[in-house]
Image (cartoon, rainbow, N blue to C red):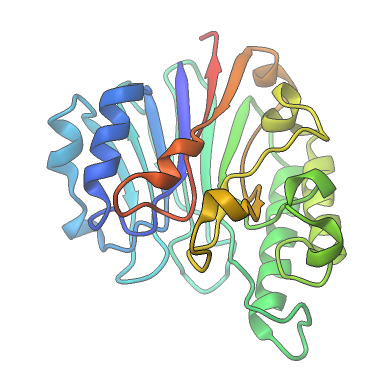
Amino acid sequence: MKIVSWNINSVRFRIAIVDQFLREVAPDILCLQETKVIDADFPKDAFRALGYDHVIIHGQRMHHGVAIISRVPLVEDDRLDWQANREARHVGVRLPNGVRLENVYIPAGGDVPDREVNPKFGQKLDFLERMTRWSESLDGPTILTGDFNVAPLESDVWSHKALLDVVSHTPIEVEALARLQAANDWVDLGRHFIPAPERLYTWWSYRAKDWAASDRGRRLDHMWATRDVAAQATGHQVFEPCRSWLKPSDHVPIMTEFAF
């Protein structure tokens, strides 16, 4: 089973490259973040035309939004409010084999890494803390994926020194993500298959005139699994060429393949 995660930055605006990706890669399940559309306007027909008949969505007008699109049946779904303000940032499902799949869009956190000056940064840290408490009580095989908006390792960013004070790579965020990971002994599948310090990025800013030449990337998108599920993972891939497609997202898809 191939499971993909992709912050698409508006699913309707970029439906052409989503269609292209699904035709070329043919994953079994696609988890999207930042869909930026209410549920009634989600382009379900475009996915069903390609055989993705199971579409679980949690949308919001203009902002946020997550979705899980699947060719295999999904047994149940839920939507957790880790932001504590009803923003559409999570949707979870159970696969036929009993594995839970949780798709999350963690807040970016604004520009200033200080919760007193920048409330958005505090909201991000509180979001991670609520996820950590959820993780501590988690029982059962689970995959956790999405845009975590944190690049934890020095080799997850183009310059550790330059980004130490930049939101997404600050020590306080890295520590918060480490607590989340430790809360259930999650396996970081990206770094399991592509160990540090090998270069591994999933996001490049739109501000760069030539994103590939400057290569100022960060690894903000992740796929984690509980130990029992991670033991069935057979490979992990980052689709960097998608960053050069027509009307690209600033994120690229990541995919893990499992032997189930």
